[in-house]
Image (cartoon, rainbow, N blue to C red; front, side):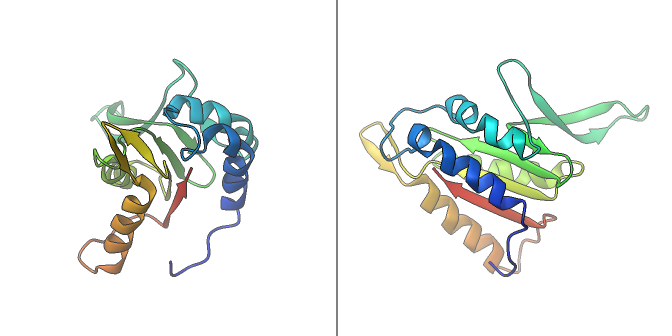
Length: 162
């Protein structure tokens, strides 16, 4: 990290702290991303995020057709319009399936996105194995930001382990 986190990130972190008992992946196995979002909902909405709920999907535009209609868009778990912050909560095999890379690239392509808030399980247990998703993603992000080979158009990534 080479810059301090923006002040608004503290509200996001508070939302995770308030929901910790329900979402902690070390003690609660099998929690889905929808369950995590439901537990985070009160705090994140208070912080100004639009959050996906049930069939109420949030889409962010990427490309537009000639007439101005959205041609390509991506669904996200949450979005903060003022801060340009995209929220993605990964559960299950998020790190094993490279969902972190997908979230990083998609957020980089979305109109008005400036930040990615990426929540990864600390531990995922499945198929007789334990994957340390948060740690794996942290190392990937460190490699991306330490290298001069890939320049991302984002002001920052807030990685949260739950």
